[in-house]
Length: 222
Image (cartoon, rainbow, N blue to C red; front, side, top):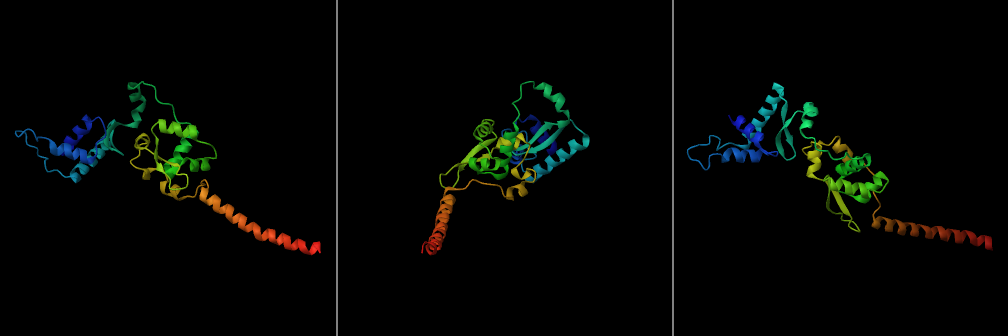
């Protein structure tokens, strides 16, 4: 019976529901009607999770045209991707243009190395990304995450909740080879402090050389 209640809630919802939201709806039924007792008033979150798994398996075993999916923001009933060609005809509105290869490449760098500055992304790609970055932000895939604690305090960028929804991910750990790519070294733009110290070292290194040239030239002058 609890499974059917949850199924009805998911079917009626206009958005994904978390386990806690489902639990609140299950326990809250009958609060305003004493003549309609709620047999699930003492339900636990673990029971809701178990019922969700039963529904998910049941739909798969029965070969239904829809499935129960867990997204970043909760659980939702959705049509099986195998029937997308037919379902798409119910929504003839024009789809937003696909991301260009530069857009996808930029988005991938941000996704795997977020939060990251624009300059560091450009250091990897080797080209300016001003226009591409603006497009990603307008599409709601990338947002400003604050400022880096380095000289100049450049803006940091990261992916959004919509990014996870758009690519069907529950969290960033579901990105392909996420752990490996996050730890792999990638180029980054030199920080002003590093450049300054490098110049100082170079100047310091020139002094002995110059002195050496002077001393080596003296015997010849004699």
